Image 1 (tube, rainbow, N blue to C red):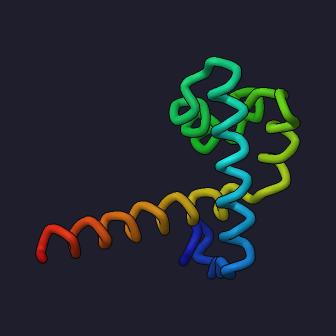
Image 2 (image 1 turned 90 degrees about the vertical axis):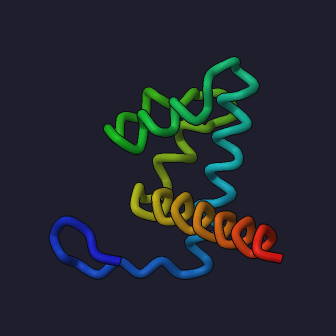
Length: 92
């Protein structure tokens, strides 16, 4: 993967698992507080403004520990893996 500065970004499986867990915990915290988790996470990813994420259950501190590229990488990876699974099941 390449970022805006044409630097290679390598997402290891360990980073991906960490990002997956962070996203899951943040999603749950936002949901529990009555927010729309998808919109709040999108807002954070677009602006990198941590105030989009609640402090509840230390979600804001948690998201700040993970690089935004790792979070985006996890979301894109998950999307295409799920899409591939769904495409494979519809072909059968």
